[in-house]
Length: 79
Image 1 (tube, one colour):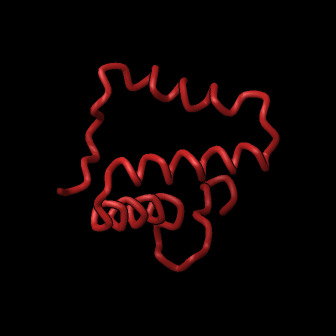
Image 2 (image 1 turned 90 degrees about the horizontal axis):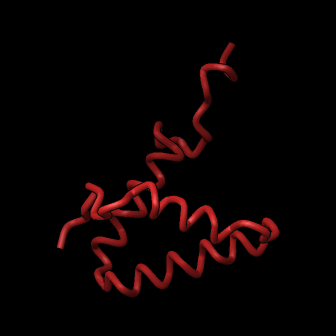
């Protein structure tokens, strides 16, 4: 199985809202716990370590696009 990066939702905005709404009213700590639990539940549902590895790499590239481990800098921050 390969990682699907195209939307598989008939209503992607609705799916996004579900995730955002799940965090409403939670503390930062509880929100982080929810994210962790959700990731592990969905990773188990996928059940493929290679796909999970690919998804982790993709997520890291979106946070750390230069691969240096530093956070990406917005154009506003670089002025």
